[in-house]
Length: 167
Image (cartoon, rainbow, N blue to C red; front, side, top):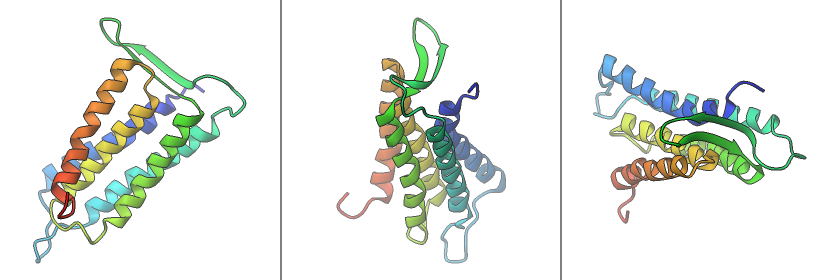
């Protein structure tokens, strides 16, 4: 398979987050009379997260269960010996499937409960999904470190802004 399925699955949520931010920047905030945001942005984020889940299912179906080692490996040189190298084994594939399944479920669960700063919430969730998938795919230590540390930022925002009273 020549298509870079790992990169597609990893960066689809990030593309969705960027697109949602661009559309909001062009159209302005869509608010209701009660001051809450229009939930269409949540449904847009849900579409991107479901597309990511479908991509992960395609990735699972193209995985050889009888093979050993890393599969679906993508590799490119960056700079100074740092490589963009991603691949999956059986364990990381299952963790990617779990991540891409739970993200739409979490977005569905937030329908009606997140009323303010909904766009930022959806963008933070999609960015977090990108970084979590990247952590499970990374085969280069620097790339793993970048994905892991970057994932702390949207996680901090989600917990700090939209978390419960005892966050």
